[in-house]
Image (cartoon, rainbow, N blue to C red; front, top):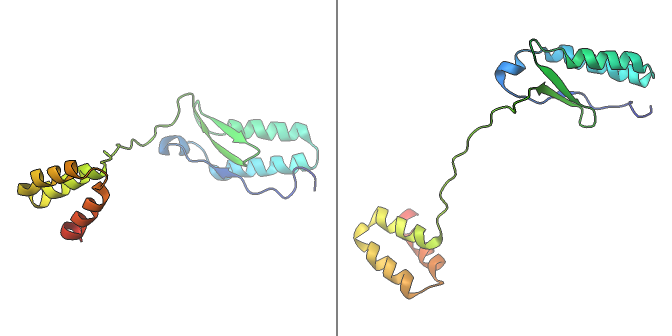
Length: 137
């Protein structure tokens, strides 16, 4: 079969809805499959022509980026596609978690818990475990 035989199918890597709507994935997959056949038959001029046809298949100023090794293709623009913004959660340590639990369920005991945490450093996790058992479970 050689280098281009028994290949896995081509897959599109999604970008933005607007960009992906500018290309017919069946057309691109068909052109790339025909290119695979041309490469298998060692007709490299046809394979190059099909590659260029697939690359310029999208409407407008868009082009495709084709990755032979991973058998993937995607719409290519100079600017990267927008990414979802994930807001970082504030990560609280065990002492802060203890104080937050007590302030939520029994605010009058917050100073008592703060004093316990200061009196027994290194025991924050065991205090947190007890607080969770008493208030959350």
